[in-house]
Amino acid sequence: MRNIILSLFLFSSLLADDHTIAVLDFSGENIHKDELKNLSAVFRTELLQMDTLRVLNYDDMSDVLIDYGNTTSCSSLECAVIASMLLDQEWLVSAHVSKIGDVFLIEARLIESSTGRVINAVSYDYDLSIEGLYTRGMHNLSDLVMSKRIPLEIHKRQNLVYFKTNPTGAMVRVGNDTLNGTTPLAVDRVVVESRPIVVFKEDYKPFRVERLQDDDSDIIFIQLKLKVPKIGNVVFKEPVPDDISINSSIDNSVLLIDEGNDRIDNLPAGNYRLVSDTYVIKNNSFTIKHRRTTKSSPVYYPIKEIVDKKSFYLKRRNIYLQILGGGLTYRSFITIRSSYLYNQYTANSDNADKRHRTIDNLDNQKPVLDVFSSLTIFPIVYYHAKFLEMERWLKN
Image (cartoon, rainbow, N blue to C red; front, side, top):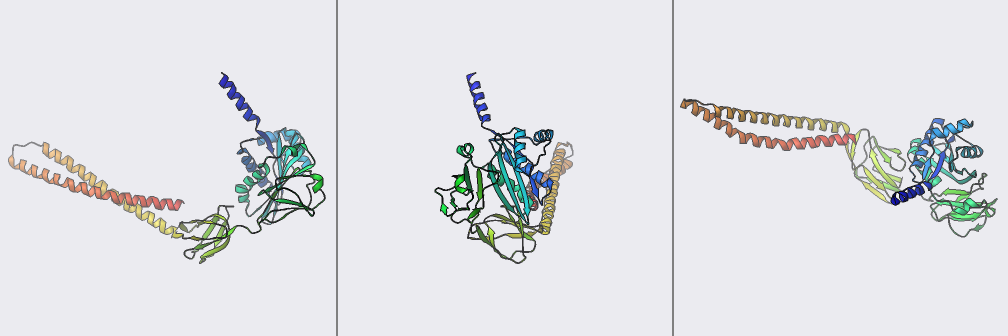
């Protein structure tokens, strides 16, 4: 009984460490409202995968806000703060997505519902496709919003501003003065108000903070960018045929390679694979490392050729199966025939001799048929394995 009570206590204490959070539908510019709603749903899913978060069900959130005459999306801070208080969750996230050319810029706030204060404000920009924003962007945004623990003094004191950077270890210059310490760094608001702020780190581009947030955010998160992106080159053993593309695991983008190229320069560091609608490509994966040239030796097989080979191997396998089946059938026949003749009784000696000669002849055929049947098993296995290999190539 004592163990049960102890287990319940531990379980309840674990639940107590969970944080409750709600996520409003994203607002945005130059992007369809359905896309915004879907992005916010993916963002909720990313938060659900974090062990210490309990995310408010969307339908429950919608019912509460509609009952009070509010909507599930807010474009202003005031609206988001009111929504956070109505929903009675510990935290609330609101985000605004803007599409500028091919770049998606997201500004997100984490609001503490009990005080209505913004305890984290982040900006995240994503180049390329909307699909990449779904697959990687929302994961990265959730990490930025919820990643690092916020010091307790930041919650308690309004006059502190907390600078967070990725990567950490950056220095902060306010006006002409460089502050002591590196990020993450808490600074008195009076020190940084109305003065230009530059965050800098070796090998990274300096980031200029023109002014503090108007909403009195306690947290300023900055994603530093390398001065020189991590890039490398790839060299192919032979010139690339037509209809070959490079698929990047970084953002799932696809780059079509010009026919006849034997190298591509300045690819971002990461993992890649060659894909095609015309060829099956073996040895199609390679890794780009910073300031290095990677050698790739892909082998291209036209899909039509693979389809023809698959059909060829299937026919050969079936032929040998038929031969094996015929041999086994004939082997069964002579076994039955031999037994039948052996069991026949006759007083005529001539008929008896003839019957025994027939039985001997049938028995002599059995070893030949056994060897013949055994010899057909190897090609059956071989052609079936090749058939499955071609089938696997086509699926991949």
